[in-house]
Length: 187
Image (cartoon, rainbow, N blue to C red; front, side, top):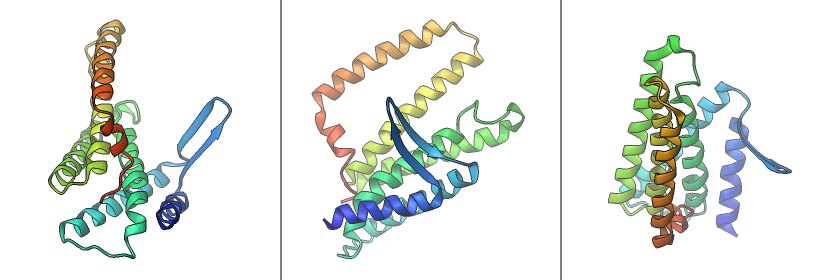
């Protein structure tokens, strides 16, 4: 029950910062109403995940923080990486802001790399696998951007994506623990 309340509390804080998710018939809506809300949520989520990583590094094991670990890990990681993924997209901004596009991509890559390092070194499997998932999404997005920049036929992207999806499905079938660990906490 305490983990459920911690998860609900984390979700409520993220909702107060501007993140929303709801379901309609045949449609899931996830996102933010404004760019400011997305930036606030991204920063708060990044700080929350970072704080739990630092606490893990310092071997702090508090009974008062334990209920929030899963919510911060799952919802915090999801909102942080999703906001960075949106901001690092080539089509999110006008082409006049090429320098910001590079900075957004560097911030995404840096955040993912640091999360990978902490997740793998300090045994935070959920964090490592969530960042792995978003690293794959980021790489797919960059492949689409590269395809557009080189003016290649869309069929190259579809064919490459199909091959990647096939081998990813084979790997996930052989390693179901990866999917399960996406929902594990920072423990």
